[in-house]
Length: 309
Image 1 (cartoon, rainbow, N blue to C red):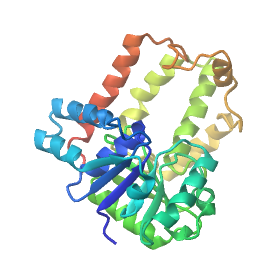
Image 2 (cartoon, rainbow, N blue to C red):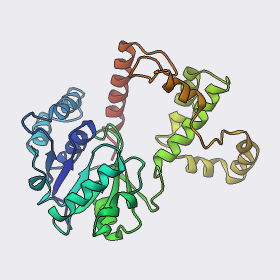
Image 3 (cartoon, rainbow, N blue to C red):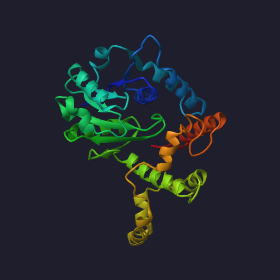
Image 4 (cartoon, rainbow, N blue to C red):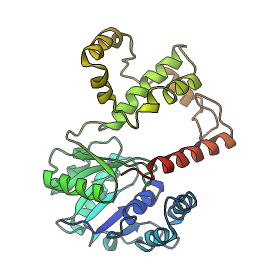
Protein backbone atom coordinates (compact mmCIF):
# COMPACT_ATOMS: atom_id res chain seq x y z
CA UNK A 1 0.00 0.00 0.00
CA UNK A 2 1.32 3.45 -0.93
CA UNK A 3 1.16 6.09 1.80
CA UNK A 4 0.17 9.43 0.29
CA UNK A 5 -2.25 10.89 2.86
CA UNK A 6 -1.18 11.23 6.47
CA UNK A 7 -3.22 12.50 9.40
CA UNK A 8 -1.58 13.71 12.60
CA UNK A 9 -3.79 13.79 15.68
CA UNK A 10 -2.59 16.41 18.15
CA UNK A 11 -1.21 19.85 17.32
CA UNK A 12 1.32 20.33 20.09
CA UNK A 13 5.03 20.66 19.40
CA UNK A 14 5.41 17.00 18.42
CA UNK A 15 2.24 16.97 16.33
CA UNK A 16 3.30 20.09 14.43
CA UNK A 17 6.80 18.65 14.06
CA UNK A 18 5.44 15.43 12.56
CA UNK A 19 3.15 17.31 10.18
CA UNK A 20 6.25 19.16 8.99
CA UNK A 21 8.24 15.93 8.60
CA UNK A 22 5.58 14.28 6.43
CA UNK A 23 4.91 17.43 4.39
CA UNK A 24 8.60 17.70 3.52
CA UNK A 25 7.91 14.87 1.06
CA UNK A 26 6.33 16.20 -2.12
CA UNK A 27 4.04 13.18 -2.59
CA UNK A 28 2.44 13.42 0.87
CA UNK A 29 -0.61 15.45 1.82
CA UNK A 30 -1.01 16.05 5.56
CA UNK A 31 -3.99 16.85 7.74
CA UNK A 32 -3.23 18.14 11.20
CA UNK A 33 -6.15 17.65 13.54
CA UNK A 34 -6.36 20.60 15.92
CA UNK A 35 -9.06 20.99 18.55
CA UNK A 36 -9.22 24.68 17.73
CA UNK A 37 -8.97 25.02 13.97
CA UNK A 38 -10.08 28.66 14.15
CA UNK A 39 -6.52 29.46 15.13
CA UNK A 40 -3.72 28.52 12.76
CA UNK A 41 -1.74 25.80 14.58
CA UNK A 42 1.10 25.98 12.05
CA UNK A 43 3.06 28.78 13.71
CA UNK A 44 5.62 26.31 15.19
CA UNK A 45 6.06 24.77 11.72
CA UNK A 46 6.63 28.18 10.18
CA UNK A 47 9.21 29.02 12.86
CA UNK A 48 11.01 25.71 12.28
CA UNK A 49 11.07 26.28 8.54
CA UNK A 50 12.35 29.84 8.99
CA UNK A 51 15.24 28.51 11.07
CA UNK A 52 16.08 25.86 8.46
CA UNK A 53 15.89 28.47 5.69
CA UNK A 54 18.10 30.91 7.59
CA UNK A 55 20.76 28.22 7.92
CA UNK A 56 20.63 27.28 4.26
CA UNK A 57 19.16 23.85 4.95
CA UNK A 58 16.08 24.42 2.74
CA UNK A 59 15.11 26.74 -0.10
CA UNK A 60 12.20 29.17 -0.10
CA UNK A 61 10.37 26.87 -2.54
CA UNK A 62 10.67 23.98 -0.07
CA UNK A 63 9.51 26.28 2.74
CA UNK A 64 6.37 27.27 0.82
CA UNK A 65 5.78 23.74 -0.47
CA UNK A 66 5.73 22.25 3.03
CA UNK A 67 3.15 24.75 4.24
CA UNK A 68 1.00 24.18 1.13
CA UNK A 69 0.81 20.44 1.85
CA UNK A 70 -0.55 20.80 5.41
CA UNK A 71 -4.23 21.39 6.08
CA UNK A 72 -5.82 21.50 9.51
CA UNK A 73 -9.26 20.79 10.91
CA UNK A 74 -11.03 20.17 14.21
CA UNK A 75 -13.34 17.59 12.60
CA UNK A 76 -12.09 14.12 13.57
CA UNK A 77 -14.17 12.30 10.95
CA UNK A 78 -12.91 14.55 8.16
CA UNK A 79 -9.35 14.27 9.45
CA UNK A 80 -9.07 10.48 9.30
CA UNK A 81 -11.55 9.20 6.71
CA UNK A 82 -9.17 9.24 3.71
CA UNK A 83 -5.87 8.77 5.53
CA UNK A 84 -3.45 6.02 4.59
CA UNK A 85 -1.57 6.60 7.85
CA UNK A 86 -2.94 8.07 11.08
CA UNK A 87 -0.47 8.88 13.84
CA UNK A 88 -1.44 10.19 17.26
CA UNK A 89 0.58 12.67 19.30
CA UNK A 90 -1.77 13.12 22.23
CA UNK A 91 -0.97 13.10 25.95
CA UNK A 92 1.02 10.14 27.32
CA UNK A 93 -1.99 8.64 29.07
CA UNK A 94 -2.88 5.00 28.37
CA UNK A 95 -6.64 5.43 28.71
CA UNK A 96 -6.67 8.50 26.45
CA UNK A 97 -4.71 6.67 23.77
CA UNK A 98 -6.83 3.51 24.01
CA UNK A 99 -10.05 5.47 23.69
CA UNK A 100 -8.71 7.49 20.76
CA UNK A 101 -7.81 4.34 18.81
CA UNK A 102 -11.16 2.77 19.66
CA UNK A 103 -12.91 5.90 18.37
CA UNK A 104 -10.99 6.37 15.13
CA UNK A 105 -10.81 2.74 13.99
CA UNK A 106 -14.33 2.60 12.46
CA UNK A 107 -13.83 6.06 10.93
CA UNK A 108 -10.72 5.04 8.99
CA UNK A 109 -10.29 3.04 5.81
CA UNK A 110 -9.76 -0.69 6.53
CA UNK A 111 -6.31 -0.39 4.95
CA UNK A 112 -5.20 2.60 7.03
CA UNK A 113 -2.22 2.13 9.35
CA UNK A 114 -2.88 3.34 12.89
CA UNK A 115 0.31 4.50 14.61
CA UNK A 116 1.15 5.85 18.04
CA UNK A 117 4.07 8.16 18.77
CA UNK A 118 4.34 7.03 22.39
CA UNK A 119 7.90 7.04 23.71
CA UNK A 120 7.56 4.23 26.26
CA UNK A 121 4.05 2.77 26.45
CA UNK A 122 3.03 -0.71 25.30
CA UNK A 123 1.77 -0.78 21.71
CA UNK A 124 -0.15 -3.95 22.47
CA UNK A 125 -1.93 -2.32 25.40
CA UNK A 126 -2.73 0.82 23.39
CA UNK A 127 -4.26 -1.40 20.67
CA UNK A 128 -6.31 -3.45 23.15
CA UNK A 129 -9.65 -1.74 22.42
CA UNK A 130 -9.37 -1.98 18.63
CA UNK A 131 -10.88 -4.79 16.56
CA UNK A 132 -8.13 -5.14 13.93
CA UNK A 133 -4.97 -5.05 16.02
CA UNK A 134 -2.81 -6.09 13.08
CA UNK A 135 -2.69 -2.51 11.78
CA UNK A 136 -1.78 -0.80 15.05
CA UNK A 137 1.91 0.00 15.34
CA UNK A 138 4.36 2.21 17.21
CA UNK A 139 6.22 5.00 15.39
CA UNK A 140 8.32 6.81 17.98
CA UNK A 141 9.82 10.00 16.59
CA UNK A 142 12.40 11.90 18.64
CA UNK A 143 12.16 15.58 19.48
CA UNK A 144 12.64 17.74 17.48
CA UNK A 145 11.30 15.31 14.86
CA UNK A 146 12.20 17.51 11.90
CA UNK A 147 15.88 17.34 12.94
CA UNK A 148 16.31 13.91 14.59
CA UNK A 149 16.39 11.22 11.87
CA UNK A 150 15.60 8.26 14.14
CA UNK A 151 12.13 6.70 14.17
CA UNK A 152 11.55 3.52 16.17
CA UNK A 153 8.99 1.29 14.44
CA UNK A 154 7.59 -0.97 17.15
CA UNK A 155 5.72 -4.21 16.58
CA UNK A 156 2.82 -4.90 18.93
CA UNK A 157 2.01 -8.52 19.68
CA UNK A 158 -0.52 -8.64 16.82
CA UNK A 159 0.94 -6.05 14.44
CA UNK A 160 1.37 -7.61 11.00
CA UNK A 161 4.79 -7.76 9.42
CA UNK A 162 3.27 -6.27 6.26
CA UNK A 163 2.17 -3.16 8.17
CA UNK A 164 5.58 -2.93 9.78
CA UNK A 165 7.39 -3.18 6.45
CA UNK A 166 5.05 -0.68 4.77
CA UNK A 167 5.62 1.95 7.45
CA UNK A 168 9.36 1.24 7.61
CA UNK A 169 9.75 1.65 3.83
CA UNK A 170 7.68 4.84 3.80
CA UNK A 171 9.77 6.41 6.56
CA UNK A 172 12.94 5.60 4.62
CA UNK A 173 11.38 7.11 1.51
CA UNK A 174 10.72 10.44 3.27
CA UNK A 175 14.29 10.62 4.55
CA UNK A 176 14.06 9.29 8.11
CA UNK A 177 16.25 6.60 9.67
CA UNK A 178 13.76 3.99 10.88
CA UNK A 179 14.76 1.03 13.02
CA UNK A 180 12.66 -2.02 13.82
CA UNK A 181 11.88 -2.96 17.41
CA UNK A 182 10.59 -6.52 17.15
CA UNK A 183 9.40 -6.87 20.75
CA UNK A 184 6.95 -4.58 22.53
CA UNK A 185 9.08 -3.79 25.59
CA UNK A 186 8.92 -0.63 27.75
CA UNK A 187 11.13 2.10 26.31
CA UNK A 188 11.71 0.20 23.04
CA UNK A 189 15.39 0.58 21.98
CA UNK A 190 16.83 4.08 22.29
CA UNK A 191 15.00 5.12 25.45
CA UNK A 192 16.21 1.98 27.21
CA UNK A 193 19.77 2.90 26.25
CA UNK A 194 19.26 6.53 27.25
CA UNK A 195 17.82 5.68 30.66
CA UNK A 196 20.59 3.19 31.36
CA UNK A 197 23.08 6.04 30.83
CA UNK A 198 20.94 8.42 32.90
CA UNK A 199 20.79 5.94 35.77
CA UNK A 200 24.58 5.76 35.92
CA UNK A 201 24.99 9.53 35.44
CA UNK A 202 22.52 10.28 38.26
CA UNK A 203 24.31 7.75 40.47
CA UNK A 204 27.73 9.31 39.83
CA UNK A 205 26.45 12.71 40.98
CA UNK A 206 24.45 11.29 43.89
CA UNK A 207 27.49 9.42 45.20
CA UNK A 208 29.84 12.40 44.91
CA UNK A 209 32.05 10.86 42.23
CA UNK A 210 31.72 13.95 40.03
CA UNK A 211 29.36 16.91 39.73
CA UNK A 212 26.73 17.26 37.01
CA UNK A 213 28.76 19.58 34.76
CA UNK A 214 31.71 17.17 34.89
CA UNK A 215 29.54 14.18 33.96
CA UNK A 216 28.24 16.07 30.94
CA UNK A 217 31.75 17.13 29.92
CA UNK A 218 33.01 13.55 30.20
CA UNK A 219 30.28 12.29 27.88
CA UNK A 220 30.32 15.25 25.50
CA UNK A 221 34.08 15.16 24.87
CA UNK A 222 34.61 11.43 25.33
CA UNK A 223 32.39 8.59 24.10
CA UNK A 224 29.62 10.91 22.96
CA UNK A 225 31.94 12.48 20.41
CA UNK A 226 32.28 9.24 18.47
CA UNK A 227 28.73 7.87 18.86
CA UNK A 228 27.41 9.59 15.69
CA UNK A 229 29.81 7.53 13.57
CA UNK A 230 30.75 4.56 15.79
CA UNK A 231 27.96 2.48 17.30
CA UNK A 232 28.59 1.03 20.74
CA UNK A 233 28.36 -2.58 19.53
CA UNK A 234 30.58 -1.74 16.56
CA UNK A 235 33.00 -0.29 19.12
CA UNK A 236 32.90 -3.57 21.08
CA UNK A 237 33.76 -5.48 17.92
CA UNK A 238 36.48 -2.94 17.09
CA UNK A 239 38.36 -3.35 20.37
CA UNK A 240 37.74 -7.11 20.41
CA UNK A 241 35.04 -9.06 22.21
CA UNK A 242 37.64 -10.73 24.42
CA UNK A 243 38.67 -7.32 25.77
CA UNK A 244 35.00 -6.24 25.97
CA UNK A 245 34.26 -9.36 28.03
CA UNK A 246 37.19 -8.80 30.37
CA UNK A 247 36.16 -5.18 31.01
CA UNK A 248 32.54 -6.18 31.60
CA UNK A 249 33.58 -9.00 33.87
CA UNK A 250 35.41 -6.50 36.08
CA UNK A 251 33.17 -3.42 36.03
CA UNK A 252 29.51 -4.45 35.90
CA UNK A 253 29.38 -5.33 39.60
CA UNK A 254 30.29 -1.72 40.42
CA UNK A 255 27.64 -0.10 38.21
CA UNK A 256 24.33 1.28 39.45
CA UNK A 257 21.66 -1.42 39.30
CA UNK A 258 18.82 0.15 41.26
CA UNK A 259 15.28 -0.56 40.05
CA UNK A 260 14.00 2.69 41.55
CA UNK A 261 14.56 6.28 40.37
CA UNK A 262 17.57 8.12 41.76
CA UNK A 263 17.02 9.44 45.30
CA UNK A 264 18.71 12.71 44.37
CA UNK A 265 16.51 13.04 41.29
CA UNK A 266 13.42 12.53 43.47
CA UNK A 267 14.73 15.08 45.96
CA UNK A 268 15.14 17.68 43.20
CA UNK A 269 11.58 17.05 41.99
CA UNK A 270 10.14 17.14 45.54
CA UNK A 271 11.86 20.49 46.12
CA UNK A 272 10.48 21.90 42.86
CA UNK A 273 13.83 22.04 41.07
CA UNK A 274 12.79 20.85 37.60
CA UNK A 275 15.68 21.96 35.40
CA UNK A 276 15.01 24.40 32.55
CA UNK A 277 11.38 24.74 33.69
CA UNK A 278 12.41 26.40 36.96
CA UNK A 279 16.00 27.53 36.31
CA UNK A 280 17.47 24.95 38.66
CA UNK A 281 18.01 21.21 38.42
CA UNK A 282 21.31 19.38 38.61
CA UNK A 283 22.73 22.77 37.60
CA UNK A 284 21.59 26.41 37.75
CA UNK A 285 20.18 27.84 34.52
CA UNK A 286 19.57 31.49 33.66
CA UNK A 287 17.05 32.37 30.93
CA UNK A 288 19.97 33.29 28.68
CA UNK A 289 21.67 29.95 29.27
CA UNK A 290 18.45 28.05 28.56
CA UNK A 291 17.92 29.94 25.32
CA UNK A 292 21.53 29.38 24.31
CA UNK A 293 21.32 25.64 25.02
CA UNK A 294 18.19 25.19 22.91
CA UNK A 295 19.65 27.31 20.10
CA UNK A 296 22.97 25.46 20.19
CA UNK A 297 21.22 22.08 19.95
CA UNK A 298 19.06 23.02 16.98
CA UNK A 299 21.89 24.67 15.06
CA UNK A 300 24.14 21.68 15.68
CA UNK A 301 21.45 19.23 14.51
CA UNK A 302 20.81 21.27 11.37
CA UNK A 303 24.50 21.16 10.44
CA UNK A 304 24.86 17.45 11.26
CA UNK A 305 21.76 16.39 9.35
CA UNK A 306 22.19 18.61 6.27
CA UNK A 307 24.07 15.93 4.37
CA UNK A 308 22.87 12.87 6.28
CA UNK A 309 21.30 10.42 3.83
